[in-house]
Length: 200
Length: 165
Image (spheres, rainbow over the protein chains, first blue to last red):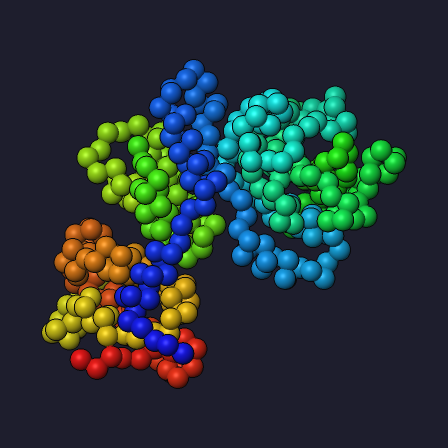
C-alpha cells in the first residue's frame, strides 16, 4: 500500500469533495431570492436541495435488503420524519411546491385519502425513497397540532412491486418503524407514504 | 454573497468537520440560511461563514457529546513540539477519511487549518481564539492518539509510520 505525508493525503481527500451542480444551483438560488427581497421573502426562504447521496443509499440498502419493501420504505420514511430537516419551501399550496421543487420528475398531487381532512400542508423539501428522488411534504393537523410527513415519488411497478393500488380498491398498507406508523399506497401514478403517531 | 468557488470552499470546510458529505451539505445549508437571516455586512464573509459553520457544528455536536478544549501546560510538551511535527506522519493513501473520522471535532478543525489553510501553530491559535499552549497540547495528544491507533498496523491497510527527518 502506497503511503504519503499525512498533510498531503488529508488535503487531497478534502479537496476532492465538491458540491454537485444541483446543490450549487440551489445554494445560489437561495442567495438570489434573498437579494430580491420580495414581499413573500420569509415564506419563500428557500433552502438548498438535498438529495440523499448514493453512498448513503448503498449503505442503507445493504443493511436492510432483507426487509420487505414496504417495511424498508416505512423505516426510511420514519427515519426522515424524525429528523425533521428544514423545509425548502413553506407554503400551503401543493402547486407552489411543485413549481419550486424543479428537480422532481413528477408533479406533487393531493391524495384523495386526505381530502376533507384536518391535515394542512405547511411546506416541502427534497428527499428520496429507496434511492428515487421524492418530495417530502409536511402536514399539520389543525385539530391535534400533529406534524406528519407525506412522501411522494414516481410509482414504478418494477421498482416498487406489490404495493396497494387505490384504483384497484386496495387499502393502504400500514407498517411500523421507530415508534411511528407509516401508511403506504399508490394513487394517480404516485407512491405515497404518510407518517402518523401510533397513539392517534 | 458567495459565488460558486466560495460555496465549494465552505462545503469542504463543513465536510472536514462532519466527515460526511450529506451532513456537510446540511451544515453549509443551515449556516447559509443563518448568514442570510443575519443580514450583516462583513469585511470577510467567507471567514464569517466559517465561524457560523463551526459554531453550528459544535452546537449540533454538543447534543451528542461535550466538546472541550482542555488546558494543558506547555511545559509538559517537548521543547521543539509544534504543528510541523505532524508533517512526518506517513499514512496509506486511502486512509484520510478513516483518520478524520477517528479525530475529535476540534482536532479536525486543527487539521483543516494546518493541511488546507497552511497555518502555523500560532496562526491556528489565533484563528481558533485559543491559547497557543492549548492548541499545542491538542496537537500533541492528537499525534499520540493517531500513532497509538494506526501505527500498530503499519504494514497493513491504514498503517501509520514516521518519516525519518
